[in-house]
Image (tube, rainbow, N blue to C red; front, side, top):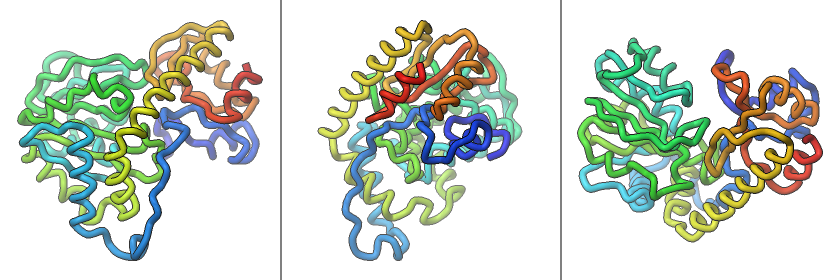
Length: 308
């Protein structure tokens, strides 16, 4: 992971600023701090390879939860990042337009597969919707090969562009780790053109998703009550974080209900200031002013307020 620009990385933060891993409050990601409760795992789930029925149940739950249009395929994978890395290989390399600034792994993956990242008309187009880090809603791309990354869209399902998944050449990405707070489970879904997903599946390989992840997804994706309550709580906590930060004298720059973006003037200084209190915030190589914070939970609120 050396040289990769991401949130997380508490081990690197501890090495730089001190403290043990358990001393740190990680606000550098956009992961729900109250994860979905794990189901009771029975039988041989930890010892047996997941069978096709387990994949089918998780993918059926995904089809229902995300209102997947008829004709679109659904493919479970070991995280949205694994899909992002493989999608550029589905088409011959050409020119790709990526609406930015945004999550950097899309450009990294396309460039690694020989694509030229350009502005304007292109053979392929990528949008992150809502965008990371500023939360902007994007227009659906119009290209022969279109990727819509909806990793953070479960907080605002009415804004989803899932209807585009029924279009030829289109793939919509969904992340399970963020909204459900189970990033360590490594689970994501590609939804879209069956021809493209048929090419993608062998790239991922057999048994790409663990049995526990499939069982958890099959349950969580049918738990609409938990999802509704979680959206309400996240929205309230995002407003609480904004109020706390605005009192500290910074300006709102965007975000979603899973992370907030602030114009703090000197982002590196703010990251250093928080790190002295063992709180990790996210800064960006393309903006010296932006600081992104995820949502605290429990005593994390008091820790952040004290640091400010």
